[in-house]
Length: 276
Image 1 (tube, rainbow, N blue to C red):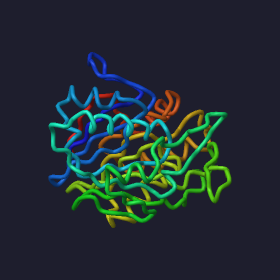
Image 2: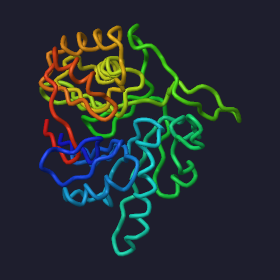
Image 3: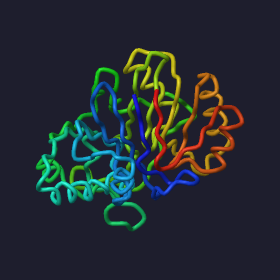
Protein backbone atom coordinates (compact mmCIF):
# COMPACT_ATOMS: atom_id res chain seq x y z
CA UNK A 1 0.00 0.00 0.00
CA UNK A 2 1.14 3.52 -0.79
CA UNK A 3 -0.45 6.53 0.90
CA UNK A 4 -0.01 10.24 0.15
CA UNK A 5 -1.22 13.08 2.35
CA UNK A 6 -2.80 15.31 -0.29
CA UNK A 7 -3.58 17.98 2.28
CA UNK A 8 -3.02 18.45 6.00
CA UNK A 9 -2.87 21.37 8.43
CA UNK A 10 0.89 21.47 7.84
CA UNK A 11 3.19 21.22 4.84
CA UNK A 12 6.57 19.49 4.91
CA UNK A 13 9.52 21.83 5.37
CA UNK A 14 11.09 22.73 2.04
CA UNK A 15 8.08 21.61 0.01
CA UNK A 16 5.79 23.68 -2.18
CA UNK A 17 2.56 21.96 -1.19
CA UNK A 18 -0.49 23.78 0.14
CA UNK A 19 -1.75 23.28 3.68
CA UNK A 20 -5.14 24.01 5.22
CA UNK A 21 -7.19 23.05 8.26
CA UNK A 22 -8.46 19.90 6.57
CA UNK A 23 -7.40 16.41 5.59
CA UNK A 24 -7.25 14.37 2.40
CA UNK A 25 -5.27 11.27 1.47
CA UNK A 26 -4.74 9.25 -1.70
CA UNK A 27 -4.22 5.51 -1.27
CA UNK A 28 -3.19 2.83 -3.75
CA UNK A 29 -3.74 -0.76 -2.67
CA UNK A 30 -4.20 -3.98 -4.64
CA UNK A 31 -4.35 -2.05 -7.91
CA UNK A 32 -7.21 0.15 -6.65
CA UNK A 33 -7.15 3.94 -6.24
CA UNK A 34 -8.86 5.40 -3.18
CA UNK A 35 -9.43 9.04 -2.18
CA UNK A 36 -9.95 9.31 1.58
CA UNK A 37 -11.59 12.65 2.42
CA UNK A 38 -11.29 15.81 0.36
CA UNK A 39 -10.31 18.60 2.72
CA UNK A 40 -11.99 22.00 2.80
CA UNK A 41 -11.08 23.62 -0.54
CA UNK A 42 -9.32 22.81 -3.80
CA UNK A 43 -5.94 22.51 -2.05
CA UNK A 44 -6.01 18.71 -2.35
CA UNK A 45 -6.50 19.06 -6.11
CA UNK A 46 -3.57 21.46 -6.44
CA UNK A 47 -1.32 19.16 -4.43
CA UNK A 48 -2.52 16.09 -6.34
CA UNK A 49 -1.44 17.71 -9.62
CA UNK A 50 1.96 18.49 -8.12
CA UNK A 51 2.30 14.86 -6.99
CA UNK A 52 1.16 13.51 -10.35
CA UNK A 53 -1.99 11.95 -8.86
CA UNK A 54 -4.88 11.70 -11.35
CA UNK A 55 -8.12 12.23 -9.43
CA UNK A 56 -10.22 11.67 -12.55
CA UNK A 57 -9.29 7.99 -12.25
CA UNK A 58 -10.59 6.71 -8.90
CA UNK A 59 -12.12 3.43 -7.82
CA UNK A 60 -13.33 4.64 -4.42
CA UNK A 61 -13.99 7.79 -2.45
CA UNK A 62 -14.26 7.15 1.29
CA UNK A 63 -15.44 9.76 3.78
CA UNK A 64 -14.30 9.57 7.39
CA UNK A 65 -17.29 11.64 8.58
CA UNK A 66 -19.49 14.50 7.49
CA UNK A 67 -17.66 17.64 8.64
CA UNK A 68 -16.81 20.47 6.27
CA UNK A 69 -13.02 20.15 6.62
CA UNK A 70 -13.24 16.62 5.20
CA UNK A 71 -16.07 16.94 2.65
CA UNK A 72 -16.25 20.41 1.13
CA UNK A 73 -13.55 19.52 -1.37
CA UNK A 74 -16.12 17.26 -3.04
CA UNK A 75 -17.53 20.41 -4.64
CA UNK A 76 -14.13 21.14 -6.17
CA UNK A 77 -13.75 17.56 -7.36
CA UNK A 78 -17.07 17.71 -9.19
CA UNK A 79 -16.03 21.00 -10.73
CA UNK A 80 -12.88 19.26 -12.00
CA UNK A 81 -15.08 16.53 -13.47
CA UNK A 82 -17.24 19.09 -15.25
CA UNK A 83 -14.22 21.01 -16.54
CA UNK A 84 -12.67 17.90 -18.09
CA UNK A 85 -15.03 17.10 -21.00
CA UNK A 86 -12.23 15.62 -23.09
CA UNK A 87 -11.27 13.10 -20.43
CA UNK A 88 -13.01 9.89 -19.52
CA UNK A 89 -13.87 10.20 -15.85
CA UNK A 90 -14.23 6.91 -14.05
CA UNK A 91 -17.46 6.68 -12.02
CA UNK A 92 -16.13 5.97 -8.55
CA UNK A 93 -18.00 4.35 -5.67
CA UNK A 94 -18.43 6.58 -2.63
CA UNK A 95 -18.64 4.96 0.79
CA UNK A 96 -19.75 6.80 3.92
CA UNK A 97 -21.93 6.38 6.99
CA UNK A 98 -25.54 7.41 6.21
CA UNK A 99 -25.36 10.20 8.78
CA UNK A 100 -22.25 11.64 7.12
CA UNK A 101 -24.40 13.23 4.42
CA UNK A 102 -26.90 14.87 6.78
CA UNK A 103 -27.14 18.59 7.44
CA UNK A 104 -25.04 19.74 10.41
CA UNK A 105 -24.54 23.06 12.16
CA UNK A 106 -22.14 24.38 14.78
CA UNK A 107 -21.72 27.71 16.61
CA UNK A 108 -23.95 29.62 14.26
CA UNK A 109 -22.44 28.14 11.09
CA UNK A 110 -25.56 27.21 9.08
CA UNK A 111 -23.85 24.28 7.31
CA UNK A 112 -21.08 22.43 9.13
CA UNK A 113 -21.54 19.28 7.06
CA UNK A 114 -21.26 18.46 3.34
CA UNK A 115 -22.68 20.96 0.87
CA UNK A 116 -23.84 18.31 -1.61
CA UNK A 117 -27.04 16.34 -1.07
CA UNK A 118 -27.12 12.55 -1.48
CA UNK A 119 -29.14 13.01 -4.69
CA UNK A 120 -26.48 15.28 -6.16
CA UNK A 121 -23.69 12.92 -5.10
CA UNK A 122 -25.56 10.01 -6.68
CA UNK A 123 -25.44 11.84 -10.00
CA UNK A 124 -21.67 11.40 -10.07
CA UNK A 125 -20.87 8.45 -7.80
CA UNK A 126 -22.28 5.05 -6.92
CA UNK A 127 -23.24 5.62 -3.29
CA UNK A 128 -22.56 3.03 -0.60
CA UNK A 129 -24.13 4.61 2.48
CA UNK A 130 -23.70 2.09 5.27
CA UNK A 131 -22.77 1.84 8.94
CA UNK A 132 -21.30 -1.62 8.32
CA UNK A 133 -17.65 -2.42 7.55
CA UNK A 134 -16.83 -2.85 3.88
CA UNK A 135 -13.75 -4.12 2.07
CA UNK A 136 -12.68 -1.65 -0.63
CA UNK A 137 -9.84 -3.87 -1.86
CA UNK A 138 -8.47 -7.26 -0.87
CA UNK A 139 -6.45 -5.61 1.93
CA UNK A 140 -8.13 -2.23 2.61
CA UNK A 141 -11.29 -2.02 4.71
CA UNK A 142 -13.66 0.80 5.64
CA UNK A 143 -14.42 0.20 9.32
CA UNK A 144 -18.08 1.20 9.52
CA UNK A 145 -19.57 2.72 12.69
CA UNK A 146 -16.93 2.48 15.39
CA UNK A 147 -17.82 0.76 18.64
CA UNK A 148 -16.93 2.84 21.70
CA UNK A 149 -15.25 0.51 24.18
CA UNK A 150 -12.54 2.61 25.89
CA UNK A 151 -13.72 4.23 29.10
CA UNK A 152 -11.23 7.11 28.69
CA UNK A 153 -12.56 7.94 25.21
CA UNK A 154 -16.00 9.07 26.26
CA UNK A 155 -18.58 10.20 23.68
CA UNK A 156 -18.67 13.95 23.13
CA UNK A 157 -20.95 16.11 21.01
CA UNK A 158 -19.86 18.69 18.45
CA UNK A 159 -22.62 20.85 17.07
CA UNK A 160 -25.94 19.45 15.93
CA UNK A 161 -27.20 17.27 13.09
CA UNK A 162 -30.57 17.25 11.39
CA UNK A 163 -32.43 14.05 12.21
CA UNK A 164 -36.11 13.40 11.62
CA UNK A 165 -36.71 17.05 10.79
CA UNK A 166 -35.17 18.29 14.04
CA UNK A 167 -31.68 19.28 15.12
CA UNK A 168 -30.22 17.02 17.81
CA UNK A 169 -26.82 17.12 19.57
CA UNK A 170 -24.31 15.44 17.27
CA UNK A 171 -22.22 12.74 18.93
CA UNK A 172 -20.80 11.97 15.47
CA UNK A 173 -21.87 8.35 14.95
CA UNK A 174 -20.70 8.72 11.35
CA UNK A 175 -17.02 8.86 12.41
CA UNK A 176 -15.10 6.01 10.77
CA UNK A 177 -11.68 5.11 9.39
CA UNK A 178 -9.77 2.72 7.14
CA UNK A 179 -7.41 -0.15 7.91
CA UNK A 180 -4.97 -1.91 5.59
CA UNK A 181 -3.75 -5.44 6.22
CA UNK A 182 -0.05 -5.81 5.38
CA UNK A 183 2.38 -8.68 5.89
CA UNK A 184 3.77 -6.94 8.99
CA UNK A 185 0.41 -6.01 10.52
CA UNK A 186 -2.30 -3.38 10.33
CA UNK A 187 -1.98 0.20 9.17
CA UNK A 188 -4.85 2.16 10.74
CA UNK A 189 -5.83 5.31 8.83
CA UNK A 190 -8.00 7.80 10.74
CA UNK A 191 -9.72 10.91 9.45
CA UNK A 192 -10.51 12.71 12.71
CA UNK A 193 -11.07 9.87 15.21
CA UNK A 194 -13.91 11.69 16.97
CA UNK A 195 -14.76 8.35 18.58
CA UNK A 196 -11.18 8.07 19.86
CA UNK A 197 -8.07 6.77 18.16
CA UNK A 198 -7.86 3.78 20.53
CA UNK A 199 -11.49 2.84 19.82
CA UNK A 200 -10.59 3.15 16.14
CA UNK A 201 -7.64 0.77 16.44
CA UNK A 202 -9.78 -1.76 18.31
CA UNK A 203 -12.43 -1.54 15.57
CA UNK A 204 -9.75 -2.19 12.96
CA UNK A 205 -8.66 -5.31 14.84
CA UNK A 206 -12.22 -6.61 15.05
CA UNK A 207 -13.05 -5.93 11.40
CA UNK A 208 -9.86 -7.40 9.95
CA UNK A 209 -9.20 -10.15 12.48
CA UNK A 210 -5.57 -8.98 12.67
CA UNK A 211 -4.20 -8.14 16.11
CA UNK A 212 -0.75 -6.80 15.22
CA UNK A 213 -0.73 -3.05 14.45
CA UNK A 214 2.36 -1.65 12.76
CA UNK A 215 1.34 2.00 12.16
CA UNK A 216 -1.40 4.47 13.04
CA UNK A 217 -1.86 7.70 11.13
CA UNK A 218 -4.26 10.58 10.54
CA UNK A 219 -6.21 12.94 12.77
CA UNK A 220 -6.59 11.87 16.40
CA UNK A 221 -8.91 14.67 17.61
CA UNK A 222 -6.68 15.40 20.58
CA UNK A 223 -7.16 19.12 21.11
CA UNK A 224 -6.77 20.50 24.62
CA UNK A 225 -6.88 16.91 25.85
CA UNK A 226 -6.47 16.60 29.61
CA UNK A 227 -4.15 14.07 31.28
CA UNK A 228 -7.10 11.76 31.93
CA UNK A 229 -7.45 11.34 28.14
CA UNK A 230 -3.93 11.88 26.83
CA UNK A 231 -2.16 9.64 29.34
CA UNK A 232 -4.16 6.45 28.69
CA UNK A 233 -4.09 7.16 24.95
CA UNK A 234 -0.29 7.38 24.94
CA UNK A 235 -0.03 4.23 27.07
CA UNK A 236 -2.34 2.28 24.76
CA UNK A 237 -0.49 3.35 21.61
CA UNK A 238 2.91 2.73 23.20
CA UNK A 239 1.85 -0.83 24.06
CA UNK A 240 1.27 -1.51 20.36
CA UNK A 241 5.05 -1.25 19.71
CA UNK A 242 4.43 0.69 16.51
CA UNK A 243 6.84 1.31 13.64
CA UNK A 244 5.49 4.85 13.47
CA UNK A 245 2.75 7.17 14.64
CA UNK A 246 1.88 9.81 12.05
CA UNK A 247 -0.56 12.02 14.00
CA UNK A 248 -1.76 15.16 12.24
CA UNK A 249 -4.71 17.43 11.41
CA UNK A 250 -6.76 17.69 14.62
CA UNK A 251 -3.92 16.70 16.97
CA UNK A 252 -2.51 19.76 18.74
CA UNK A 253 1.12 20.41 19.65
CA UNK A 254 0.69 19.51 23.32
CA UNK A 255 -0.81 16.14 22.33
CA UNK A 256 2.01 15.42 19.89
CA UNK A 257 4.58 16.20 22.58
CA UNK A 258 2.76 13.97 25.06
CA UNK A 259 2.52 11.11 22.57
CA UNK A 260 6.14 11.52 21.49
CA UNK A 261 7.29 10.89 25.06
CA UNK A 262 6.15 7.27 24.69
CA UNK A 263 5.54 6.62 20.98
CA UNK A 264 7.53 6.90 17.71
CA UNK A 265 5.82 10.09 16.47
CA UNK A 266 6.79 11.00 12.89
CA UNK A 267 6.51 14.27 10.99
CA UNK A 268 3.48 14.69 8.72
CA UNK A 269 2.53 17.29 6.12
CA UNK A 270 0.92 17.85 2.75
CA UNK A 271 2.78 15.93 0.07
CA UNK A 272 4.22 13.22 2.33
CA UNK A 273 4.11 9.73 0.76
CA UNK A 274 4.42 6.57 2.83
CA UNK A 275 4.80 3.00 1.59
CA UNK A 276 3.87 -0.02 3.69
